[in-house]
Structure formats: structure tokens, C-alpha cells
Length: 409
Image (cartoon, rainbow, N blue to C red; front, side, top):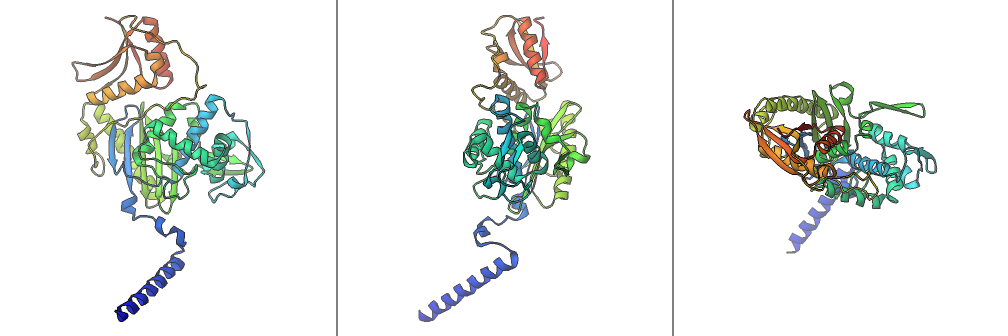
């Protein structure tokens, strides 16, 4: 027994020495050992979705929790846009940079504590430069403190239907509890474009000049891929190379998310390939192809049965928006058509999403799916007066939702 204890003790000292050597050689701090990055195959996740219908065209590990890294800043900006829209802040407001904000690690603008920057420039620094110091500055300006703002981010994620997401900070720097998923990031990417089209162009800005220095957007696809209009990159050692990207071609809007890439170049190439294949897939679907046939176009098999991406409505701010007179009941036989789909499940889901988002305009009219002789499932609301149907379509089209007024005949 004594010999065994001595051997065990020697083994313990040897193991401790080995770990210490690993810490020195690999440059890993003791507190970071538990947060070491997973092998690349365990970090990878991807999803491609039709942003107009919510139809998932491709998915791999899309519901597995991952570290979002700086993609976090999309939610930070979502809350900033919400504050702008409600009038709680203004783009010309000047933010005083706190010591907490100034102390954040790169990437950053490097503004000294006590200096000021406008809300508009701070937004651009997040969208283009991915500045961690300005993420904290905006969080403190909107939420009062970084911790309170992070709580607001998580609540907003729940409002939008992001089931796997929890935010601990506004920038995405490493924290083991700060997690999301490819599906949740796709939901957020669609929601920010849907809910704030007036501010969405920030994500598409290719370069930004501040105090004599020009910064290129970290999303390389903006610079060379047709139709790409946003959104955000991210990288930490634990997350790998992340990217959520939005692109529009010929009236079709797709979102692609890749997490856990091995390098910037391979990640960008993979996202570009997924988007190109995604546009082929939506064309195939429009020509009558099934979801399964469209899925076969992708470089690897999707690991889940095709489903609809559910993007919930965000709970509006109490003073956001203006009151709109809504129909109180069926006033006529006029209808509006908000889409036509080959898949009846997709048509039903889209009908529900439009009804929830535009409940002021839809009112108490009746939603229905009308099959056509050509095999389409037409998503319609019936029970409008003529003027109400026209006004509802105008509101939907202003928000980039296709709409057609259908007469009683």
C-alpha cells in the first residue's frame, strides 16, 4: 500500500508538471483550459434558409450549441436599432466611452476613456470593424450597464424564438455560458432585416473611414459575391471562424450561417458554395421540385428532415410604431394573397408568420390555403373591404412581403 501511494504521488507530480509544460508551450492560461476550442468537426454547424418563406434548404448540426463570437454583435445592433426606432436614442447622440469599454481587448477602435463618439459611428464600428470597445459603449448607452444589456439580449432572443441562445456580453468574447446555434443565428439574421429595413444597410457597408483611417468590412463576401448585403463574421479560438450572410438575387432572399470554420478563406468559400447552391435549390422549388430534390444539390446531406424556420415577432417597445386602424371583422369578400408555394406546410407556416407580423392590417380576417390546378398552395386572407385589402397590401409590400389583391370574383 505504501509503495502504491508513493507511485500515485509521483504520478500526480508528473501529471502536474506535464500540464504546466503544456500551459507554457501552448500559451494557454490555467483558467482557459476548460474553454479550449473543440476539434473542428465538433465546432462545425451550418444552415441555409429561404428568408422569405422560412424554408430550411440545408442544415448540419443546426440546433447544436456553439460559441457565436462576434456574430453576437448582430443582436447588440438589433437592440440599438430598436432604441433608435422608439426614439429612446438618436444617431447623433454622443456616447462618452467608459473605462470598462476602453479596456476591452481587440478588435477595437482604441478610443481612450472619457472621449466621445456618435451613436452612428459606433454602429458602423460594430458592423464594419467589429469593435469590441464600441459594443460595450453602445450597450452601456442603451441598457445602462453591460450586464443589464446582456440580459435584454437574452430576453430578445427568446422573443424571436432563439431557443438555444444565451448572451453574457454584447461582443461575443469568450464565456462558456455565451452560446447560440446556427438555427438561432439564422432566425436573428432574418429578423433584423425584417424588423429594421431602414437600418439594415449598416451591415452591407463595405468600408468605413474614421479619424483618417479606413476599415474594410470583415465580411469578405460583401466585396466579391453577387447579391450579398450583410451580415457579420466572428472568430475566437473556441468558436472557429463564423459567418452569417444574407444575399438576394432575382427577388429571392437567402440566409446562410456557417460556424466553426477552419480559416477565413475556407469559411468564405464554403458559405459562397452554400449560397450558390441555395439559389439553385429555390429555383428548383419554384419549378415544382420537392424539398428533398433541392436538398440533394448541396455538397453534403442535410442531417435533419426539412422544416420551416420559425422567426417569431419581437415584443414591440411600448412606444414603438404608430397606431393603425384595423379591421374589426369581415367586411367583404376581397382577399389578399401573400404567397404561393409548392409545399402546403410551408404555405401554412408563412401565412401564420404574415398574420402575426401584420396583425394590425390583417385584423380578424380569415387565413386560408387555396390549392390551384397547377399544384400551388396559395396563402390568402379573406374578409376585407376593397380599400382595406389595398391598404393591407401596400403595408406588406413596403415591408418587402409580396402581396396581391384578389377580387371576389
